[in-house]
Every structure is written in C-alpha cells, then in structure tokens.
Length: 161
Image 1 (tube, rainbow, N blue to C red):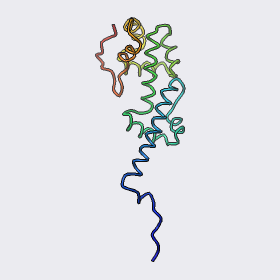
Image 2 (image 1 turned 180 degrees about the vertical axis):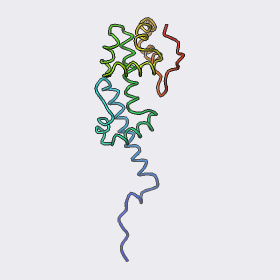
Image 3 (image 1 turned 60 degrees about the horizontal axis):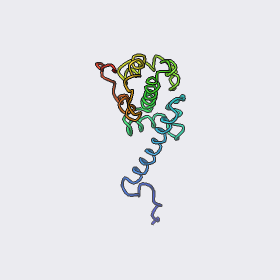
Image 4 (image 1 turned 135 degrees about the vertical axis):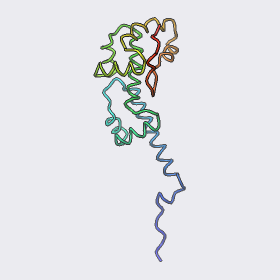
C-alpha cells in the first residue's frame, strides 16, 4: 500500500484558501483605489492599474466592481469630477484648463461625464458655484458639493444658487 499523499490546498479547512485569496485581492484593490486617488490627474487605464498589482485587466475590473460597486474607470472619472468641481468653484480657471488639470484629454468626454454626475454642464456649474459655498468651511463645501456616485444626476436637478 502506498503512503498517504502530501497535503494540498484541497485538504485545508473549507473556505480557508478562498477567504485568504479574497483578503489578498481586497488588499490589492485598495492599492488600486489609493493609486487612483493619488494619481487621478495622470493618464491611467485599467491595463496599467492591473499591471501594477499583477492582475489581468478583466479580473481587476470584475473584482473592483464587486468590491466597490463601480468600474475602475468610473471611480477614476468620479475622482476627476470631484477635483474639477473644486477648481471650478475657485473660478480662476476656464473649463478647458480645469479639464486638462484633472487629467482628462477630451473636453467633450469631460463635459458629458461632469453633466451626468453633477446635473449641470461645467460652464454652468462654474458660474453658479462661486457664490454657492461662500462662507462655508471647506470640509462642509466638499461634502455638500460631492457628485452623485453610481448613478446619473436627476435630469430635473435644480441649478445651484
């Protein structure tokens, strides 16, 4: 009779290997999200983000969506729009300058995504937002002006006062 074969991952307690892998994946996904938060103004694409954590682009996209409820690209664009909103509130840059400052290379794509998330085009937001947060602490202004995530802004959104 042959001896017992060496233990494999199949012999580990049920779910342990899967749970360990899930924790490793979540740590890698946090690294990707942190990189997007830090480098939003640089050209980033899913392939580059995936290479940085040694995943395939497809696996990264699926896992990121499962963990955070949106794709890496959608998360990146939300970060860019949040920063654009802050720059537009300052009022010293044109919409085109803001578009390029936040890492967008297409004014059309930037304007479309901005309108989807905020509810008004960037030019309208720039005109209206300058006075909307006057006198508000910056931490409060950031919270009340945060764009809608994971869904489009309502079409009937009231303009900023």
